[in-house]
Length: 115
Length: 111
Image (cartoon, rainbow over all chains, first blue to last red; front, side):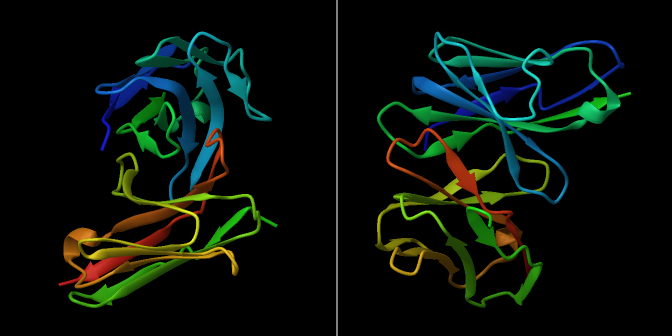
């Protein structure tokens, strides 16, 4: 299957700082990337859908000014958590869809801890 | 009503058993059905991908889709301790622009 690389795999940051998470499709071009948040023992919660070259579409209840998403190229999307708060501590996962297909491939996830 | 319903388990079986995992859904527009395996603290890994109704087999894994009943299944034969993980079902419509996930079923295979 296609490979999606997510970096970093874990990060600890102080309250009030910003953290950037990268999601790269290594062997295919991804016109659409998805960002999810997952709480322990719960399913994936879609935060936003990003298409290359256009603004991301955020799900209801997700603050777009807090969770900045950039999809500048067909192989890279970034999620920046701004003014991080302990409540933002969670597991963030990206996925990418191969253009013309419908299955999605996931990154390894990033565990964010805000102290 | 949730778009996708999945029994969270946990499910515990002895090694070598046949495991049956299931999801039901309410949206008849779903056409693509996927099963993902997620180990603790890792991203989901695509296991099976099927389109419309029917069966698909890959090694010890068989995915079944019954669109008339809005019911999908994943069977694992000769289960191994390494199969211990959370299994997520997912589905989407024609465009694939939005995926709907089940809550995941936690499976433990006991040696």
